[in-house]
Length: 206
Image 1 (tube, rainbow, N blue to C red):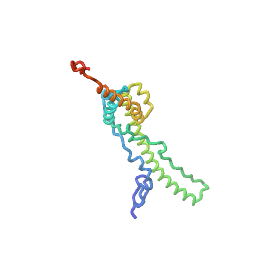
Image 2: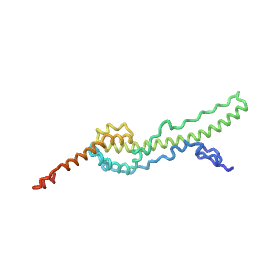
Image 3: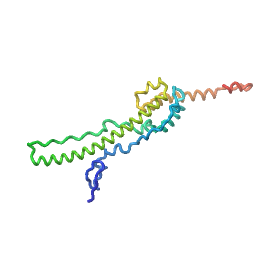
Image 4: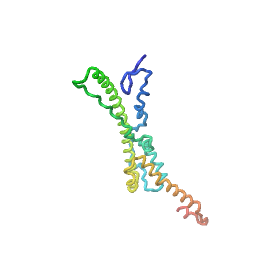
């Protein structure tokens, strides 16, 4: 039966004993979306939001966030890995002593070999976890920096302790409805407006 070396634990396995089944959690972070290097954008290109016309501001901000390559963090496609997902270090095997018998020494040697395999696996998992965490932190920090420049100081003070995904959701909950109401009020004004056809020019100028 032919064998290969597992890329996760570096331990010889038969081809019929795939490490995708042996180590399913090792692939947990490998398919996460990644953040590309942030493209340069001028601060003057960032639309300012004072609390009015939310939908128009949001549409412009989506473009800024996409150009900055952090929109996947804002939408929550790239998420902060939970601490519970951080791999746990395997237990250290017992040490040899003068009282250790030859039989026990052989068992400990096997345990040590197994421990080394587990440590290799643990280190790879930990590197994946830290990479995923670092990716999210970088994207969150970049996006919050953009919001810092975009939001009026009074609005920024209410979101500066949130994540960027929480900020985006909070802005929508607070201002999307008022933006719709503004549109309805404008529509109602236009609907109810009546021209004085005797002299429409001054009215059109308004």
